[in-house]
Amino acid sequence: MKAVDGVDLKVRRGETLALVGESGCGKSTLARLLLRLIRPTAGHVLFGGGEDILAYSNAQVVRARRDMQLVFQNPYASLNPRATVGRIIAEPLRVHGFDGAVRTRVRELLDMVGLRPEHYDRYPHEFSGGQRQRVGIARAIALNPKLIICDEPISALDVSIQAQIVSLLRDLQSELDLTCVLISHDLSVVKHIADRVAVMYLGRVVEIADRADLYDAPRHPCTASLLSAIPVPDPVKERERRRIVLTGDLPSPAAPPEGCAFHPRCPQAQPPCARSTPHLEAAEGEGHFASCFFPLPGDARSGDDERDGAAAPRPPVDEGRPSPSRADAPAPDRERPMGDRTQAKDHHPGVANRPSRRDRQSEPGRTVAGGDGEDARCLAESLRCRSSDCRHVRAWSTSPA
Ligand SMILES: Nc1ncnc2c1ncn2[C@@H]1O[C@H](COP(=O)(O)OP(=O)(O)OP(=O)(O)O)[C@@H](O)[C@H]1O
Ligand code: SF4
Ligand SMILES: [Mg+2]
Image 1 (spheres, rainbow, N blue to C red):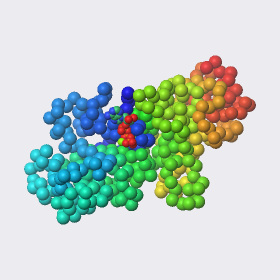
Image 2: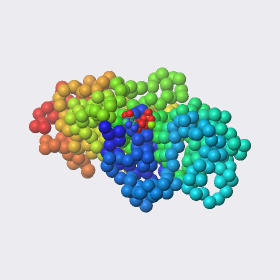
Image 3: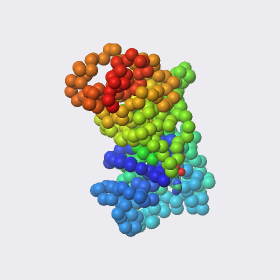
Image 4: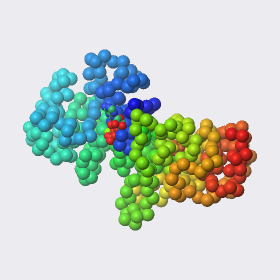
C-alpha cells in the first residue's frame, strides 16, 4: 500500500505551504515523512543546505529535529497529563541541552503564545482546548526551529478559538521567520494563512499554486470540489451556492483506481481518464501546476467574492477552455462522459466565436496534439461538446486517433 506516492514538493524558506485534501489522502503521512518520523520506501527529503535527512545517523536526526518541529492535531492527546505546562514546554530545551535559564525561557514562550506566567505550574486538564494548543505551539517553537509543521492544528477547536490560533500562528511566523507547512482539510482557514497551497488526493499532489491563483482559478476538479464546500457568509448567496458534491468515498490506497485515481468520483471524467495517469504539469499562472487531462478553465471567475476574498470555483462542466499545454492528453472515446455531468451543455457555445483552426494553429506557443493538426484545446472541447454537428466533434470522429 502506498499512503503517499510520487510527491515532489519544495517548501520555500519563510513561506507557509498548506497541504489540503480529504481525510485519508496522506497529509499526516507526508508530514511524518518530512520529519523522518517514518521512512519512505524510496525518495529523498532535502532540508536546509540540501542534505538528505533520510541519510542521517540517529544522532544527526536528533540534531536536525531542533530545526524541525511538529504541532499536533489533538491538543488533548498530545500533552502529557501528568506533567505541568512548564515541564512540557521545557522538555525540548532539556533534551537538546539548552544552556540558558530554562524557567525564564519557558515564561518567555508562555508570553509569546498568549498565556500567563501563572500558567507555568498548571496541568493540561486545567486548560481549554485553545489554551492547550497554545502550549503545543510554545513547545514547538521553544528551540527556535526553522521549519514548523502544523498537522490540523485547529480542527479539534471550536470556530472562535480557531481564529485565535490561526492569528497566533501567523504572528509567530513573521516574528520568528518560520517556514511553515500547514496541514488542513479546511480551505476557508488555509486562505487566511497560506502563501501556497498543495491539494492532495489519494497520496498524490494533484494541484499546487499560489493561494490567490488556486482560489481564483482552480484547475483540478478535486480542488474545485473542496473550494465549493466553503460556506458563504451571506444567506442569499449561500442558498445560491453551487456545491460540487463528490459521490462515493475516497478509494483505498491499497487498491487505487487505474488511470487517474480521481476518475471514479470526478465530475469531469472522460473515458481516457480511466486508462492513463495524469502528471503535474504547468497550468496558466506562474507556479501553478495541476495533474488533470481536462483541467477547468483558468480565466473565468465566479461572482461569489463574499467568500472572504476567495472566488468560487466554476461548475464542473461549462464552456471551458482547458489548458493548451495538455497536448499529451489521451485520445478521446466517442462515448458519453463517465462522471456525473449535471451541468453539461447541449452545445459548446464558445466554438462559434473562436478563430478558425488554421488561425489558432498559427498562434505563437500553440501546442498541437496528434497528426491531424487538432490541438489539445479542441480535444477537450470536443469531449465536452455533446452536439453531433459541432465541427470539433466531427474533427475527432474522423481522426485516425
Ligand atoms: N501506520 C499506518 N499503517 C497503515 N496504514 C496507515 C498508517 N498510517 C496511515 N495509514 C493509511 O494511510 C492513509 C493516509 O493516512 P493519513 O493519516 O496520512 O491521512 P490524512 O490525510 O492525514 O487524514 P486526516 O485528514 O483524517 O488526518 C490512510 O488510508 C490511512 O489509513
Ligand atoms: S478530468 Fe480526468 S484527469 Fe482530470 S481529474 Fe477528472 S478524471 Fe482525472
Ligand atoms: Mg491527518
